[in-house]
Amino acid sequence: MTEIRKRLDIFALLSFLLPLLLYLITLAPSVTFFDSGEFITATSCLGAAHSPGYPLFINYAKAFTWLPFGSIAFRVNFATAVSAGLACYGAYLLTFTLLGKEDFPGAPGTGALFRRGASLAAALAFAGTPRLWLQSNHDKPYPLLAFICGIVFYLMLRWRDSVDADAEHPGYVYLGAFLCGLGTAAHQIMVLMIPVYAYLLISKNWRVILRVREIILALSFGILGFAIQLHLIVRALQKPLLNWGDSKDLGQFLWTMLRKGYPVEKPVRDLKLLWIQMNAFNVPHEYTAVGITLLVLGLFFCLKKNRDAAIAYLVGIFSFLLVIAGYFDAPADLVFLSEEFFTPLYLLSAVFIGVALFGILATIAQRFPALTARRAANFLVPVSLFLFPAAVCALNFQENDQHENYIAYDYASNSLRSLPQNTVYFTWGDSGAFPLWYLQGVERMRDDLDILHTPHLVFRWYLDAFPILKNSRLASQQLDSLSPEAALFLAISEQVGSRPVFVDFSTRYSVPFGGGFQPRQRGISYRIVPQGVPVVPPEQEVWSLYTLRGITGGDMFFRDLDTGKAIQIYASSHLEAGESLLSVGALAAGLNEVKLAQTITPELGPQAAQILGKYGYR
Image (tube, rainbow, N blue to C red; front, side, top):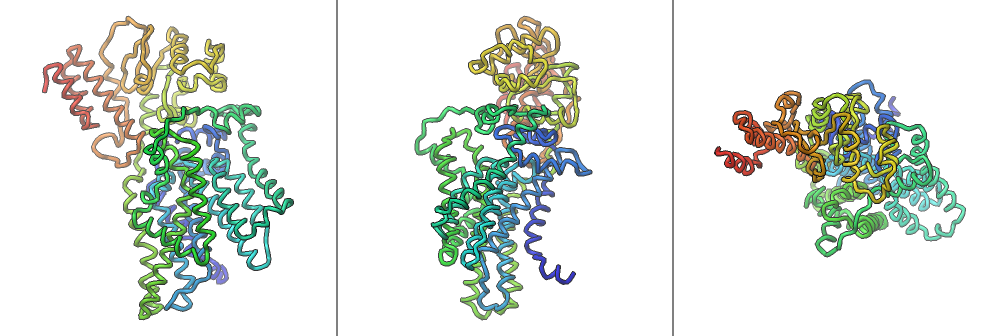
């Protein structure tokens, strides 16, 4: 037991446990918006999420679904929190490795303590960044990817140390190659880290590029790690609940891997757009102005003993920006989707911030020799541990606290509970569809409904997954030339005569209805009826079926883009219902609906005033 205590690094343990505690305190209790419902559903059935499928994250998170507490959504969120804690440990490990065996001036024998203190500060600073934090308290693959990237960087440093010691261990490189292949199954941006690792190898011994046998071995290990992608093919043959892309053959596998389902028309790039694209990597936003200053100092401190590590970090920045900003060339309104790709670089940024903290403390100790070892231990270490990381955490806590975020769960359950039996429900947009997939597919809510995602109606693999669509006229169409809107109207025309057909709010306002159909409001959904059916006032009893946690009264601070949209949908639906009721003379009910809309979203005040003025009210 004594030997275990000696070998146990309590600082390393804290670099994992403290971030994990932070993430558990702010953990989302259930499904959230954006890709959440899709990831949870794919994990639950060991299927495939959207391109490129994410088989590593799905298999990793699947083990957590067997925990004996919480919903499946909570367990997958917990899995993400654990992976984010591991990523913070990766920052600790790298920082401690780069600091080497440096002693602390003026405090002989305390070098390890101060190195561990600065390394823990780096891990905690990384833990409090808005990017990692937002990915840590609900299901995301990027923390797991960041951890793998950090470990491979560490393995390259260990290989370099073995070369310096004249006892080269190529096993570090082989393990790193295996993890690189494995990491592509968390996300393909793992490939953008390969130039970083290659530089660490070549800058130590450029002759490694001539070692054909070792290169072949490293490639073999990389392919072995990449083999986890076979999950997509194996599971597609088993027809899981969520089988995005249906990778049952090589063609569909490549379609999924190469993201062929997301064609984006390249914008005309100017300097303004290029600047927006490059600012997707934003260290000042993540670490504040103090953090970017510390980062620059850390790179400067590394120039003497760890110059190649600092240059490798800069190589990573160049590699990521060259591909993500340069090649991808995303339109301005889609740049936000690439912000999370830079998570591995933010981990490395934290490492150099930790180096800077140690360097600053060492410089202070040199300049003020009156600071004894005891004073340094009592004062400088706590400062390095808590001052900067605590500030980063305090700045970002409120906006990342999701422990009461039931907005997506309630939005989906409200939609499902309020629909008639045997309804076919058309959705538009990931956030509108994915929570519904989770509730129906995993929590088994409303199995009688068919939930169809309109943008996917033009994909053959999607039509094959739904019995009601296999014999549809859609199956005989040339899908490559069919728009989602045309597919929607064709599907509606086949269903509307035999069963209730509803669309969600996003579909209602994304598609110009006409040509024989009209939407009739029912809460936050719309029933599609033939043109010419008499208009009736909105059904008021549907609102009593809704649960509205966090919608009014400032119950929940967390507001991401899609959560804000959901709240806006509730408010806009009340406003629309109010106007419809006022138009048919239901004054009391109409005024109440307008008031509710303003209560939920006060910004609708001008629109509400315009509607009331139209009917003679102030």
